Amino acid sequence: MKKMCALLFSADHLHYASYLPVYYVQLCNLEESHPGAKTPLQDSGLSVARSSVPGCYIAVDQTIEQTVSTSAKTPEGLIGFSRNVSTY
Image 1 (spheres, helix red, strand yellow):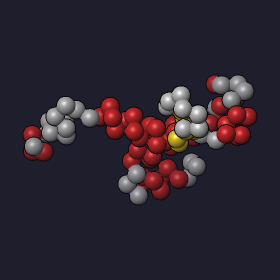
Image 2 (cartoon, helix red, strand yellow; image 1 turned 180 degrees about the vertical axis):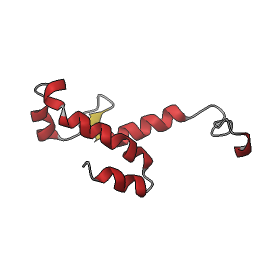
Image 3 (cartoon, rainbow, N blue to C red; image 1 turned 135 degrees about the horizontal axis):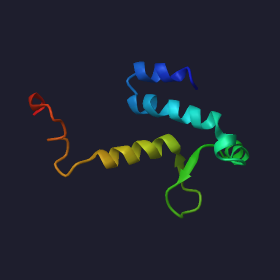
Image 4 (tube, one colour; image 1 turned 30 degrees about the horizontal axis):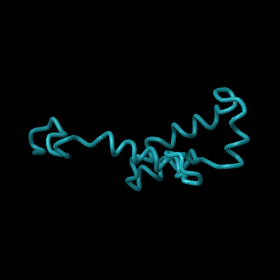
């Protein structure tokens, strides 16, 4: 997983390239930060339930990508997003 960071960056998958090192460090330190979490992760994998509907799980990276995309939206869209005048 650690070796994939540079590959994802070079393939222009910036969200994955940014968050994968964070995932890697968290997983390496899992027993210290969250004792007992390793077994359920090994059994169930990395997924998130965003609703109370049984069986509606999605991958963690997809959840983060959706969350970041949603929070990055502005009322005007992407217009006015940059402070650089030449981008307008």
